[in-house]
Amino acid sequence: MKRFLAIILAGLMLLSLAACGEKKDDGKTKIGVLQTGQMEGFQSNEAHNKHRQGEVTVKREYIPYSNLSAALMDLESGRIDEIGIEKCTADYVIAHNDNIESYEDSKEMTVFSMMTLDTNKEVYDILNNAIKEMKADGTLDNLIENELKAYIESDPVAKELPHFDGARTIKIGVTGDVPPMDFVAANGKAAGFNIALLTEIANRAQVNFELVQIETASRPMALSSNKVDAVFWTKGTECPVCGAEDAEKVEGTLVTESYYSDYFVKIKLKSDK
Image (cartoon, rainbow, N blue to C red; front, side, top):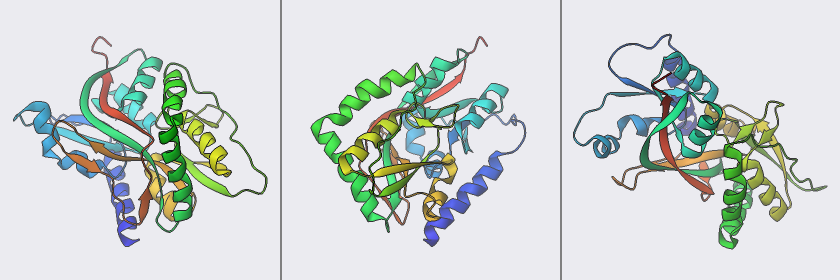
């Protein structure tokens, strides 16, 4: 648990450093990323830069953000040059902003999973077993094909989760920062692919889900404080080209099998804007 809290405190320190004023002209490319435990890997993994740029040294500074809206605002204002996000989210942002484009596909993969504390193994087993079943019987592939892709060009519609009288209630943290996966509508209701995923899990396990809105950066704290029982989590970044892996390993937690994986790409303002 000490290790767990140390990671949270380190993340908060990074956020305070990122909150500085205007962009400094130090020759570095400023790249905004949503704050997760992967920050250290992004900054230190030289193998990723070598396969992208050969032996050329690239000056990059990764700026952590607690939410996507803040990163997009700084991109618009010029405080950062780029944002690194998953391709499905990049496609969603581009579909809703005609002055933003995707320009780099790094071939790295982000793996989407769910995470609980290791003291909450019963919840972990409920989530993990359902995801495994959905992968085995093709349900997950159908959800990705029919739900996820449909949400990219149009905002997901909030749907009521199933309710079972007398059943156990599991609290799930949602951020709204990874549309169309994790999306919160203007009326404050969660929608998107992850809600479709939870609906299927609820029906299989006969459990109720209570959604709790939290910021991306506060997910570990929300778990450790028992505000939520589980969160959606990016398990790690895997690079098939160079073999490097920035896997998210937080002591004291359990991470389910992945339910989706996607390329990690960069977006920026269009040059003619």
